[in-house]
Image 1: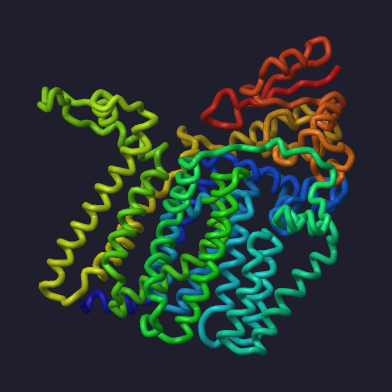
Image 2 (image 1 turned 45 degrees about the horizontal axis):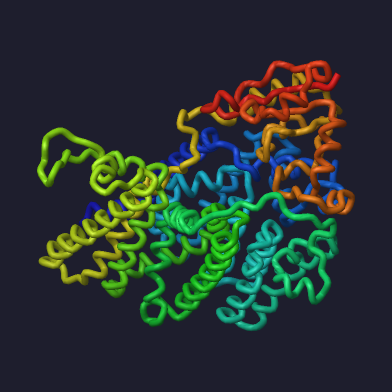
Amino acid sequence: MNYIKYIKNNKFIYWIILTAICFLFFYQAFSLAHQLPSRVDEGSFLIKGYFFISGKYKLFEDYGPWTNNMPLAYLIPGIPQFLFGPGLKVGRYFAIFITFATLTGFWVLINRLRGRWWALAVVLALSINPSWIGMNVQAVSQGIVACLVTWAMVFLLGDERNVWHIGAAAFLSAMATLTRQNMIFLLPFVALYTWWRYGLKEGVVAFLFSFIPFAAVHGIYYPKIMNLWYTWLPGLITNIFNIEVIKGGGTQVWQPDGDLIDRLSSFFIAVKYHLVSLIGVCLAFPLIFRKKNWRSEDEWKMVISLLALFSILFGLHGWASLTKNYCIFCFPNYVAFFIPLGAIVSLLTISNLTEKKLSVPTLYLVGLVSILVPGIFFGSLETVGRWVMKLPVPRIKDGEIIGGVTQVWELLRNRFDMSYEQQILIIPPAFGLIIAISLIIILFIGYKIINRRHKSKFSIVLSVGIYLFTIFLTPTYLLGKFPYENACNGDVIGTYEKAGDQLQSKIPDGSSIYWGAGSLVTPMVYILDTEIQPLQLNGVYPKRIGGDRDLLEKDGYYNMESQEDWRDSAEFILLLSRNMGDFWKNYLDPSLFDEYDSTDPIDPCDPNSSIQIYRRK
């Protein structure tokens, strides 16, 4: 015990451990930044950000790039692109810097609220979490918003907050909303919480410091910025007030469909990526009804407010992605915007559970484990799920073991005549239920052993055990691996830079480009001195069927007429090797086009991901 006390009080040991954890974070961050494939939004944010900062285009400009997000979503990543040169490496390294700033914010806040060792614990939990790091080190807006939200909470939460702190928190909440409009509920939250916690004067300060910058930006870009909000309005309201969200008309090309399985899968993918925080949030719900469960009334106000905001954002983002068809599998990424709120609630909850010996209803905990563990197996069908399907089992015939082994799915196929596709929806979650029951039994045995010396409650052992079990599994394939990671561990940044150099060497500055290589436009970040059609920077998503071409292009949309004109007038046409269908083979007549050597593959695991280069004669 004296040895533990010595370590706990030794600042030198503490800083050595914290430094090691930071090195672990940077190791994972740089590894993932180089390995994760580029996402559809990534190139769009980088290219448009560079264009807006350099002055080539203006935000919400007529006939300019489709400005479908708030200004800072482009301007913040655009600054390093402009200062250090456009490229995926600059974008992702800047994202690493932003993520480390988020990690630093967590340490500052938790150190104030719970002390340095709890602050170290939360930094460790995040630094070993490849899901959290991976979502934030890609050059998209999730990491930026998460950083702004975290630092808003740093200035807002805790004792001895003065007017300057409140103003900074409110201003950062406005910046988060001016990065992504889906964070709009953060503004009233900061004002109302400040009023409730600190008083009316401080609440007015919070309102002014958030409302003024928010209103100022809307004033600068009015009226076109209002289209970002009009898209949220129900059809009944837009009809009553005669609001034309898309003046050019037409119907949206991107209309994916998904069944219940897809929606459940997306939900549980979000659960597994953010499980540590979500477990803490779930444990907090039964505890908020009694103020004495928390260290003070002020802390109770803090937790109940954070829990309310997190629940609202979680529910609304779930409604937007899981109940609609536009982007069903965006839900895990949506949760990343506001997961810092859940992480704070989670830390406060688990610290109180261990220090105050709080009791969460046992039946509630058993139900929670029995749902979440099979759920995360359901959300891991493409990784752990396929491993479970191949588990070896004895061969059985007529109820007798006949020797040898077979795979689980083959045994059940022969017994129940079920296909692999049917079984994979059942077997992994069933295996997860077995794991959940086994975990409860193991923790119950541990409780019996502990209870011989220390009087404790099973619910406490179960709560802490679940939490530690979740943290332990964080770096594993079950919780911490993306199904779309590149399996060959190739250097994605390196392949993009090599392909970018090859594009630069073959395409002269000022040439007009038609991008026919799909919605992933990241390779174009290396040829920004050419003339790129700005409306193509979001791929298929702003494309319409029919409608008035001029009106559509004026607002950032386009249709087939636009596409045909750009294609027929461009000097260069760029395609992916795997997209070379019959249309392009006929269109790219050798008598009309010269074919250059293709680039190296941009996907290190896919040899058919080279960019084909054609120049009109």
